[in-house]
Image (cartoon, rainbow, N blue to C red; front, side, top):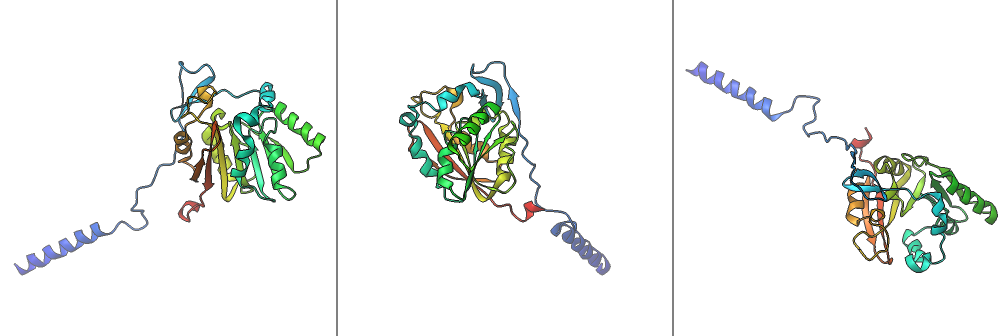
Length: 257
């Protein structure tokens, strides 16, 4: 009887020990699967859309270089209060700013003055014709702190960890590969660098812009969730657009490998 009792106690001890501890070298926490972007195509879509969808949103057609005149229209300040957007960026002398989808340089050259003389603006566009306009303005104005960069639909071609702020004015909704572009943009940011989205408010039906060229604030925030970004604030003082600001999150030690 005594021998049977001892054997039973030893067996219970072994079983308890095995359940209390995980096998050596194995992580007890379930590993999170990496986010994989999923793009869908649909036959029925907006006439100004591409028919390609990301996170439920249709991607808009890119405005061609033929629309450069619209970007520089005299009434733009009256309609959009552009001068009231710039203070929200809190730019300082010495900052390195990337103007992605720079177009004709409407904001590029305004920001170049704000970060001068030590800072510079990287004017990124995928259309050579737009960069030709910017190069002409550089030569004409003898501007020394604007650098045109020819990007691609998946990569803005910015050096890693070199940018203080990225500005995207009415352009993110036209990215054919928004996830891939955002991955590269985040890489280019310095620690605590910022990405600023200026998008026409889809929440407001009175904004006189085609629906596929507008974005909901919640949609922008949702699309940034897979990335190392923190939503800082959304400013809504402009008549047509919201200013949605994110900050780069420093990688945790476990994420660095």
